[in-house]
Figure 1 (cartoon, rainbow, N blue to C red):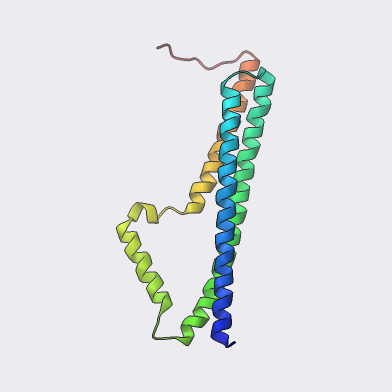
Figure 2 (figure 1 turned 90 degrees about the horizontal axis):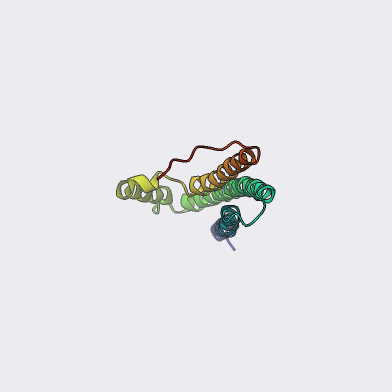
Length: 160
């Protein structure tokens, strides 16, 4: 096996790790989304006692925080493997100067930014991270509202 094949194999291995971590993040976020929905339904149906609703809202907050941390950790791992893979790709690229991989990547990225200006500026990591933080904020808000309601404080509700 020569150096180029070895470097290419290392590149492919790092890219496989990226796919693995992205799949983990997607699967965990999907499972957490189902849990979030179940917790919100448990609060909204008012079947549980008022104190149990508070506990469920706290669990919603904590699972949202967990989801954000988990998503962020996986993003860090994805960036680690991407950086490694680019180093291996640069080595392979240097062995074949007629095929400038760096130039191809930059060209395609610029074309995609022109074709999809709004979507290309949004990273998938930000979408997942903010989704989980939104749920944590929702859980915290519900916790505060439920506790306030327990102690006789309530927000005025406009009549229709």
